[in-house]
Length: 416
Image (tube, rainbow, N blue to C red; front, side, top):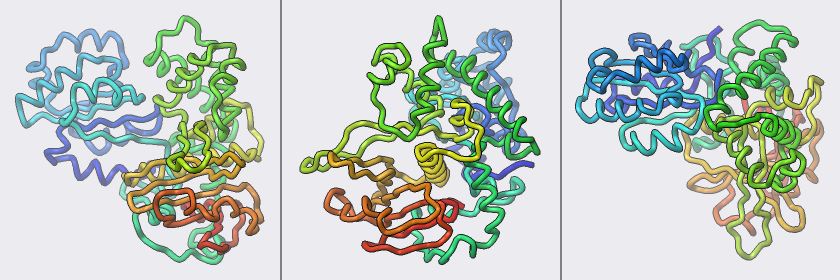
């Protein structure tokens, strides 16, 4: 079953637009990039640069030969053939008819070739595993309904239901949420009827393929073992402050190498390095980032956790990953931070919008009390913009209102 994507409408609008002459779509392997563009741009020729023999043949084509032979094409895994960027640029500058979709599974596209060669000539989009609203669709034409969170960041004030149980389609939403916490959001695990054992096997194969192909694109390792060790150690520490020296010692590598390996995980869409907010010079604030895995299925597979329960840090990472995906999906300008003071006051997520902040505390508890909102109080004394909303996300079905306009809601109530 094909699940619809928020990005579908955007790409459809670009199909015949001048701004859609070159579209760059990047994201982790197996998030559905190829399926989406092949479905939407079915009249384009599909060319994959994954095949080394095909790459050798295609490399011989001049820009004019490319334009004649493939005036409209989907070019997949373009990071494997860097020379193609100069040819696409030449075609773009000489004519106004040709149109190309470039896809790849690494931000290396954005960091290097695209920015250097195609700046000002392309529209760039990132794609992630399915969000919960996308999981709840049934076909390409079934547009995802914005979640409570997405409506908030888009400026729509909504009064929440007094209980998540009163939400329409409560059982379906809860099932999708629980499934996400256990297996993550990769389309292959959701669109097909797979057993738990088959899902874990798919995730294991994904990690193996990621190491053998995506990481090989980013770095020429003599031995993968140090990176594999760092990957598993970082998965065990998801949701925690990052100490590069400590990570390096645990993986038997230098601190600088640990930092480089974590950057590889980030630019290949496996992790989010959440920056600290510390713009208030009058307060002593932590300047250490936190690491969050972007898919709980991958994180749990790396740590060999097949139990029903996540620990507190794993739960925090899963919720933050979903929030990150959902905001990216609606293309809202937003900066993501965590906040920690010298006296251990901590806010798990600070969303900075143009007009102010949304502050979010994440608790795994199934029963929330006013005490759980204490770190969200008096934030206006620290932050430099108004606080638009303050939320406590948990597993408590009841919606509760605390002092300073703090709202506590079930995480699935906010994210579906």
